[in-house]
Length: 230
Image 1 (tube, rainbow, N blue to C red):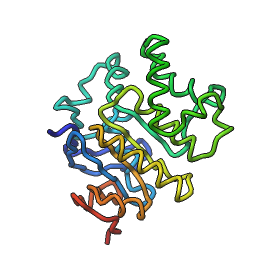
Image 2 (tube, rainbow, N blue to C red; image 1 turned 120 degrees about the horizontal axis):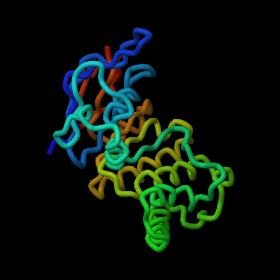
Image 3 (cartoon, one colour; image 1 turned 135 degrees about the horizontal axis):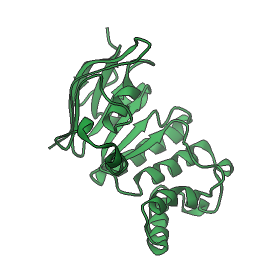
Image 4 (cartoon, rainbow, N blue to C red; image 1 turned 180 degrees about the vertical axis):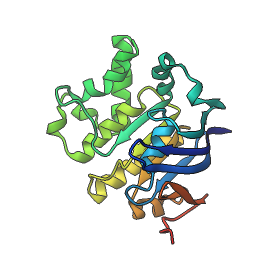
């Protein structure tokens, strides 16, 4: 089943920069896709199109067969619950404990205290951070912070997890542990879209690889390696 489809998507900015140039691709429910390419190739812009953080100048993005551009603005927050996002810089709230950081999403959704306690404890066990629930972000390592960020991103059971350079600030061992967690999340049926420049990680995954260059998709391999364009 095609969950996400981009048809002839172009994105131009006011300064004249073309971030995406006639991009066409489709992603199935449950896929694990790596989007690779050099800095400025269009990876992050592509991800923003998918979770409606930005919209195409031309073309269309469909989620579950529905054109995202047709969604009313008041519906967008509800639509974005289909997604979890993980970034290079963790984006944890420094004044909140690990437990509170992960619980925040459920609080916004109006879950009861009992539900929040059960679900946060469960997801912290999955990512191996159950013993750090009362600590603050500055008291744990970068790799541990990314585990917490991942827990927060998936606690509401999104259909898609967007991971934009999630291992960029991590040492190789911590990076590998994050990739293993992404694979575990994918095994539960969550679609994973990973943007990365880390060739070693992509090659180990042996999953679908989309290579971007200057805003275009120049290669799309079902079981690919990170092959440099040109």
